[in-house]
Image (cartoon, rainbow, N blue to C red):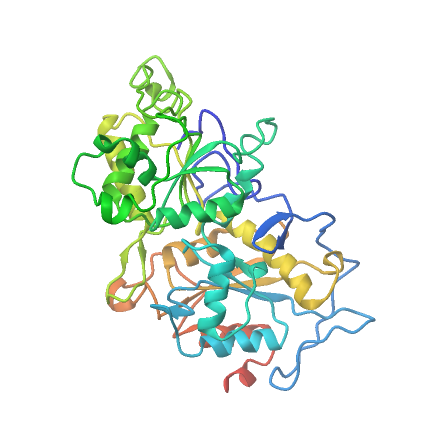
Length: 442
């Protein structure tokens, strides 16, 4: 896919291209998890004075310990998807709470890495802690739209002087657009517009009897101007009103410099790059994940944000006669920049868990990615190349999206397939020689 006419960057998380999982550059900025905001961490360096000596022990009898003479932290950690791995329809999958509690007890670091979203990180972590009965924090939690907060203070190319989007108009949508607005405002965006605002100001923009009174009127705010200029479009999680959202997104991608109600004279011009499409200052479009399906209460997987993205791209293809690709930025699993972002957060969290200065720690040898979706969890772990040499090992569970009866062999082959998250951790501990047998009783 071609680059944007003006690149957009999510710090070390996103570039100005569609993020392919094949050959994107690795992230370069160390991160520190601080509350619900991930910020650059000064002085984080990876590497030590020499190889650490690891003394395996019986996990059932003691925690990993770090003596004052020579740190002996475990050289491995875990990354868990949530839906279909730890929870199913908001209820814990058997063995999941005990597994997380066991890892915490024995100082084995882990992060939760999900393509879900729609709640602020602090709210989601509090909810997960309650449901799983395990104390969790935002320090080891990443959801699909978490990296968007980096654009509050930095937007454009790395050499750009543009600053961030904090004081710009942005259009945000998702399953509950009003909730997504609240999340964006908590991230630090000051001027957040949602579809309800536009529809309330311009009822004829979607003349098909929308649920104005029941849904939109209750959440609409006045627009800053009659036809505001929109500087970026964000899809935070799976939209519900595909028709209205598609109409508004495409209106803006066809506009002149992102001004609502305009149409660019450059559209379709054969003498311009990309035949003039998205070449007149239109806002960049960001999707927080590419998941086509997700595991819900219904026995078959349901459409996710990837399906909405495909619908928008399909309409765009019809509008442009198939002569121009839809330029957008996609983050989330399986894209390598999301895994790089997660690795930085995991390293910072690991140092906190172990009570060690980050520069005293050798890089992790292995991260076990435990997921239920071959197209996101497994593919991402298989294809990610760590800048510090950490190996990401994929573990597929049978409790979520994938099942052999429905999907046959996984489209992306994991290192191992196990029944559930408890068996996944047991297998990993056995690979590491850290007493997997003692874990069986958990």
